[in-house]
Image (cartoon, rainbow, N blue to C red; front, top):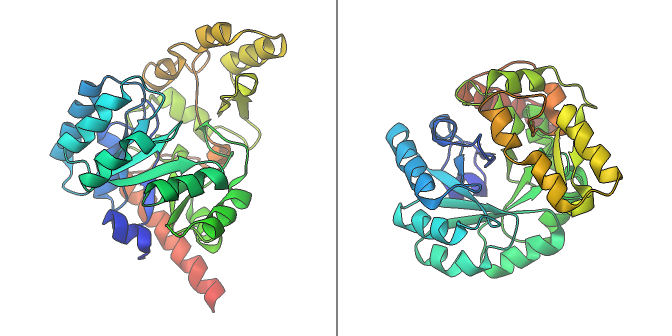
Length: 310
């Protein structure tokens, strides 16, 4: 399947793996790219030299394009932006802010820039600043989220910009992929589905929480702080929501979650850790390789699209 996105990214499939903190490291990124999608290394809040190491390790595992997700709130983002150029990374996605101050540097060095947006206004701003495409991410996503649903956001962004739009949020199979194309997207970004990939380093306890999740098992913390995060309900989310309802300060809430994502992803603490996952978690019942995931999604989507075109 060819779209403007596959041409832009030079990938076989118009599918991007989300740049998830602690999850999106070089093993997963390389596996997704080798399978025909675009793998991403999540820079998150990592020191710049750690990101450089991740890039170099990914290059040992794949000769296909992969990218880096830059969290713009990261105090190390200036150095990470430079390393992306120095290491010849072909694609950057960005989150939690406006990448405008890096746009000139990246464009001068041929980097494809794809910001993640949660509104039409931000999508228009990114197009004007030189973005090559945008990821329109709905509130169904895991991790940091906006307010609009994918179904409502994607077609409005498609109508507002000329550059390719990538749909994200609530997509984990061929049905979601096909629906995204019907909304006008030219590709999708998936996070939660790749958390459970066989190549993912995520602790088995974390993956099991996703396999066992029901449709109602996610909670959104942090609405009072202006930084809402979707994760699977556990002891930590219950305590966080209690503290929020009682007017806890930002500092108190941050203290509760300090290191909790790493504790869940790496150490498998699914009681007090943060288990970031989208509402689509209830659809995922078992793990599979990145190759199997992409082939299944594309095969099912092509059958659906062919069926409804007849």
